[in-house]
Length: 345
Image 1 (cartoon, rainbow, N blue to C red):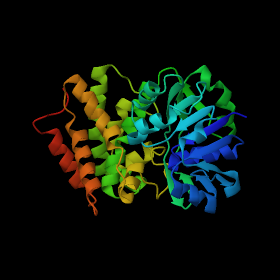
Image 2 (image 1 turned 90 degrees about the horizontal axis):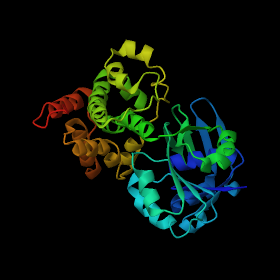
Image 3 (image 1 turned 45 degrees about the vertical axis):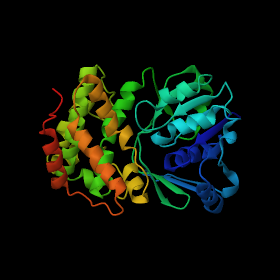
């Protein structure tokens, strides 16, 4: 059986690897020692918002802390945070088989390109995880929202498709992943807003002021994408260009029209909120920062997303960062949008 390696065993890595292992795949996890010790004590308990439950005992879990564990892998799922992509590529380069397939399942736009540049002998593919995974207790990971895994279409993935299907994680394949990655990033622009709100995702999105904040950030990104000729894929019931209008609907109408968007566990938070709570550096530079980089390439500003980046960076530096009420955060972003930089025209 072809071995699958999870490189970067965090919430997403443990959940995906655990589901694959529960489905009968041969899986090795690579991560930090404290997590390895935790899994050896508690095993893996997985659940999802639909009521699914999977249990893996400690003896079933192969966990390593170094890259040599990936040497025999036929497929490597890279699930490290985007800031760790270069380091992961440098670690994998000396050990991977030339025939190994590498699948980037990370936030942001350019991680697969970065991995491919460092791993020229391997086939590197872009992928996307649309759903939220939270760690609820030691060894326990919960999928709190809906969605299917998306990947770049390639014959190199054919030997593994059945394994994902057996795990209930069938892959949706695309000839061009860039529109898919941008569509996910548009949704992930809420990560910063959720982290700054201090609220669970569902409670935050239920409030009109926070949704208006997200609408401002998305509008800015959509205008830049249109100028660059990128048309985001449709990952939601409505096209991406309609999302800001839907977000601005009154609360009662939004709840009726956006039931799927609110199909989130009551306690689920964004990964950025978890990072801030744990004192970790966030992925803000690979989310709102991507919009800023696109704006710079086009000779424009992205003041709303730039201000969100600044606020999250300030929260990273603070031991006790304050939560932003919706009206206050909206006023801050409206002020940024109206500033000298202006919005993209």
